[in-house]
Length: 240
Ligand code: IPE
Ligand code: MG
Image 1 (cartoon, protein in one colour):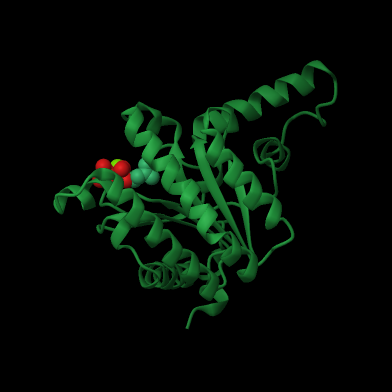
Image 2 (cartoon, protein in one colour):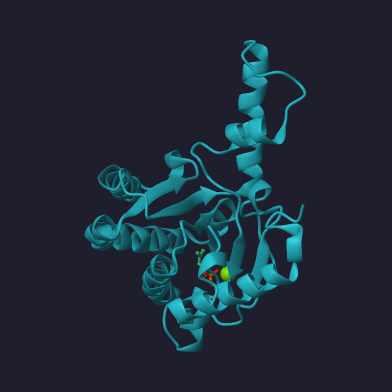
């Protein structure tokens, strides 16, 4: 059993929704809808396993390159998903948080996210971090901007900057490093998701498209993660 080796923070890049739909002669939007069902199953799985943070790269800074209609479909799917599961989150102790810049996201999704954030703010069993209009590089750049600003106004903590201080500028809330990064859809890239936060992550790539991913796939990935950890012997989670 691996209960004592469950990753604290699992980050997911859902991929393959479009191909899942196209293979069935369905519109890509249907793939995204089915992807939301997979998300719900995986969140249930994460709760069962005792994962404390689950991040989803729901919409990347690069995803704006898609046709406007597909962008709108994806945003609608997420807004519907949050509206439909707010009570579930509340009952299960899930805290919802948005990571990414809010101002380009459609109003309705911002409203749903902010309502979910508000309603679930005292939950702490599992933090579900929805990364929307999120990119690892832009995240790093914004942190550097904030550091430069504090350097200008004289409030930067002592130089040289250390990792802990940098991480505080980077993460607007207490976001732990990613232990396990999971990507579906057969591609073996991390595609500008968390960059700083995945420095020591284990990577798991699933061939199946996101709509086919289940809680059981998460359980198996966590089980593999746990056995890999064991082969690290005494080196510990961060490879030090
Ligand atoms: C992931 O699936 C959807 C997002 C979260 C952006 P894709 O839409 O990228 O699916 P494929 O890669 O075209 O199959
Ligand atoms: Mg894709």
